[in-house]
Each structure stands twice: as C-alpha cells, then as structure tokens.
Image (cartoon, rainbow, N blue to C red):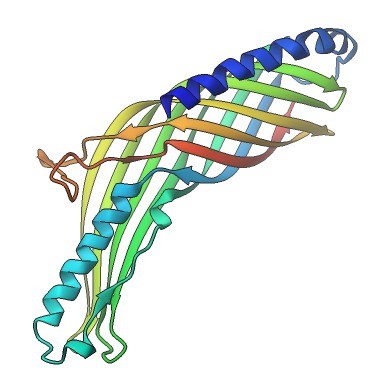
Length: 256
C-alpha cells in the first residue's frame, strides 16, 4: 500500500505539471476563481480490515460452539455467518482550503467508521447472537495542493499530506435467548500518523463549490490498548485495523 501511495503522489505531480502550461493563461484571465474553500464531504471506500472480519467470525464461532454443547441433536445446531463488511469504510470531513495562485494548503477534521458483524443463528431455535467490531476514527489532516484551472468555473486539485488519527475499537456481543436480551461491550483505543493523496474536480456556481474526487490513504493502527492491556488478533499478534485503501468522495461548500 505504501508503494501505491507513493505511485499516486508521483503521478499527481506529473499530471499537475502537465496542466501547468495550460492553466497559466487561465489563471491570469480567471479572476473569479476563489482563494478560499470550506467544504463538507462524504466518502465511501475500501480498506484492508481482514483482522476485524476474522476476529468477529472467531467470536461468532466461539458462541455457536458453546451453545451447541447444550444441544443433543447435531442437526439442530447454531452456526456463525461470515461477513466481510469490515473492508468498507465510510465517513465525513470538513476541510478548509486556501490557494495563493495555483498552490494551496488545506486543513480538516472528520469522522470515519468501519464495522464487522457475525450473526449466530439456528434454523430451529429462536436464540441468536451478534458479534460486532466497530472502528471509529477521527482524523486531523493537513494537505498541500496544486490546482490546475480549467475555466472560470472549474479546476482540478492535486493534494498530498499527512494527519494524526485517533481511534476507538468497540467489541460488542449481543444475545437474545429465552432469558431475554443482553449485551456486553469493551473499548480499545489507538492513535497513529497517516498519509494521503487525493485528486478532485471542483465546479463553481455563484459562490458554491461542488467537488468530486478520489483519495488514497495509508493509516494503520497496530496497537489497541485498554488500561495497559494490548488487544491481540486471532493469531496472538497485535490487532491491526485502519483506513488504508482508496475512497471516493463528493463534497459541497462555500468558495470565496
């Protein structure tokens, strides 16, 4: 993933340099292009959170095996589903950008999430359970931008930067049996530095900016703790999760 990130950054620089000659004349002839942007964005993407899915499945298998010990008929057993949803991330960000000519800087924060769920159920019994892992991430990011102006109302932005990421991982088990509903959860926390690169297209309408783009991120949390206790994965190593992957996003906001 690091190689992909560097590849994207290098290509963004090459592409932006190609736009430089085309945009130089537009820059001097397009005084309406704003210097400031304040954008609210939402995104959906893919992240390699295999360990979240594996851990959730292991919890589900444990519950199913425990309940199956009480059932004499092996044909009427409980089983755990296999869910890969932990590989999808979604979230929202607020970012301010300032441009001086074609060069700019952006700062932002947001909230992002990924979840893995395993359901334990039987075709013969109403008793069921859910094993959930919920990852919540708050990024604080800074980005350097180069923009290539296309017209009086549109431009491309190429950005690369880094951020500080705070996270909470909740492990939650919910059960529903003849005795009623019950739930139990525990939280582990972590923080790390991350890197990102993004390319987006911006279109202006009377002081409003509409934006769409793609972002690649390298953000890995490799040590989740609670009260000094480190969370281990199914292989007995430090549990790993994060936002590393590619995200598509759309945004809207003010431009002035």
